[in-house]
Length: 309
Image (cartoon, rainbow, N blue to C red; front, side, top):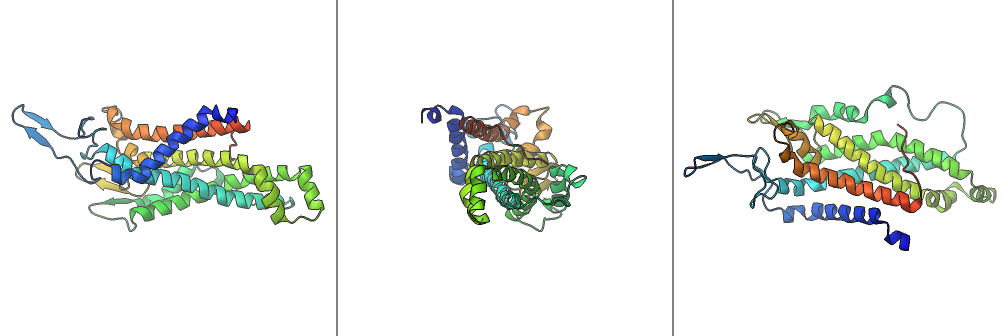
């Protein structure tokens, strides 16, 4: 118990992640402005000053505004649910489907023959290129044309693609770990006594892989977040991309955090401070997951499992 209490990385990570999840749930109720409110250009005759967005942090806009004059804190609070639900949900589905298939395959007797999963050229294609290829034709909207799908529908489609491409690696890892675990004496004894696959799976394999699966899940959450970020650099934002023809900018329809970073990446060289808010939130999420992952590794005394691609 003393070691668990001293596991500061684990508890700090859990605290940060709980804070972010709470912000995502209560975001629309805590936001100081409406997400569609835009600060208009203002001229002050007394000083001859012209005030136009983007604005730096102030008493009215705590984190400043984007180039359209929208409050960044409000956008972060609204976009949090998309970022967290997508990252946690996609990773869970990847692990659920990949682990179930891998454990069932691992319990079977190994037979010679062709590989179950395709390898070679297809396996060598970066995942973000696969998602980009499918999402690009349907993800963009502008004043002249509209995507046939809503923000939530585009989120579900992209989430499904990211789930499917992550299953094979988890299948292989879980299958191999199951085969190793199956060689244990207590499982061999259970099979000798006539225990069925369902009994072995529920009573021996799942408990034996519980810690590995926990580490794999956190690893997959980080992987999904990185994948969403890579797509955002290419302007394929989670939930849809809107091209503003007046300003010539790409905007995230859901205000997902990677999208807020991707749409302002051109300002990195000239006004990097306007990227600090969304980038800080994004890094805080990754940091919380990293701390939880490291804390669990220290608690279990295991190295992080890395899926084979």
